Length: 434
Image (cartoon, rainbow, N blue to C red; front, side):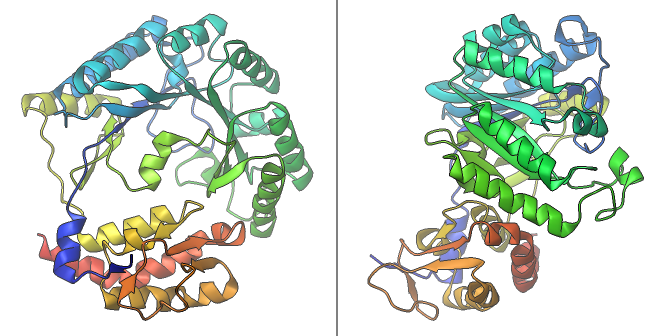
């Protein structure tokens, strides 16, 4: 059945119906050292400290649990938990258990919950991994970044390719239900040959999932002081574009589904937690620098550890309340497009109808027309509909999605045009809520 395009008033009411969170992100900020490309909120502990022997880590875990305990529960048990960083594998088994128990006591944890943790090669051993698995960790993201020692050194990474192989052997040994590894393209001195070799080496390790990211030279990082984007020894934009295409070719040929701009998975191994973000669903965020999206409000935490401790103290005193502007209908619409276009399936007519009246739908189609002509955007009609670009109704099964790889590759170009086309709507909608 076709879905009518809603009036502005109806779309506004629908947009503010927010489901309860079912996911939690937990930020563990500690690293041995800061990688040369990293601008994440982290705290460097050096090569000799970790959860077992660091008072700072112990204090952080205690304060983190205070934040979790003070956060109001929606009454819905968590279906995914993701420990990111930083280097969460610097936590002791006991510390991870403390956090997981606090989450379970406060919110509940379903029996089929996906519990993910980022682990860096060289920061854990077999006993450590077995301890995590015994706590219910069933998905591991291995921070590899490269499978060439010279590139790892150029990035400031502390592990070697030998460490990667040992870590993978342990993952197989404990029968990890689902594990992923990360790769970065566009690194200094990285050639096309090296990138292709890295892809083949990664495939040979038999992961269930791969995340492939293009290097972004962020301000205030070591790389930003050393290099200008596009200048040697960084690959050119055309070379990095070709690296993206090469990854798509090799990984899909090896049986991986390219289900998101930067992510590939074997059947049954997509990251359920990350899909929460891409599907624009609410989630809890805990820890230094973490962001939450609850009841239409997005709010972050301080990015430095002492400021975070002070913030939690105030948060607890205020009874776990946070104040932030509710995202407006126009902002929700743009968020939905930006996130949905990251996914291979794109956005459906059913979803678009929550935000679009007829004029907004027609503006969207006018904006996307050049990219439809290029083949970067694909407009999938239901079998019984010939033309819907001016229609007052949207069949729920209609889809707008980006092509793979070209649409994904140029997704930022498309999104910039979309945001520019609708920025006046977002500004007007935002001001009306203040």
